[in-house]
Image 1 (cartoon, rainbow, N blue to C red):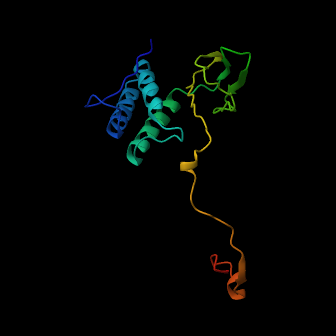
Image 2 (spheres, rainbow, N blue to C red):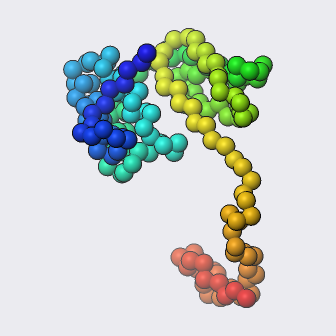
Image 3 (spheres, rainbow, N blue to C red):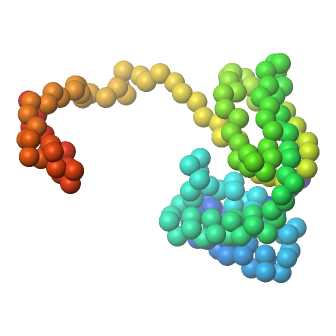
Length: 177
């Protein structure tokens, strides 16, 4: 069982203070070359950020990114060469990719998931280290009560003032019908 380490002053869901404090702790542990503890802190921090790579606020995001960048620089291995394979346990469908120093960030898109798919097999082989993060999301058709009530249609441009149209410093001044 993997143990993550983080710092918090409450018993609830993580928040911006927890992320910022934990990121500062990571920077401190890096000063002492305690990479065993650092790895556990990094695991927690990378689980807290959103799908677009941010945390809760600008401040905790900046501190977390600084700490993770420092960790990455300190643990960089120029000989990274990993093969990552993700398979659905219920079917023969699989996605596979190679991660090396030239492709340090890789996305494996488009693994369709059915309603009852709950188990996936992830196999990693090779040299180096990395963080595997799986984002799962789904789409559904909108219900009638969720549809946008606005009727948005394109506008047609009637006139463009010639003095402005030929001026590279002018910004989008149009007369619309």
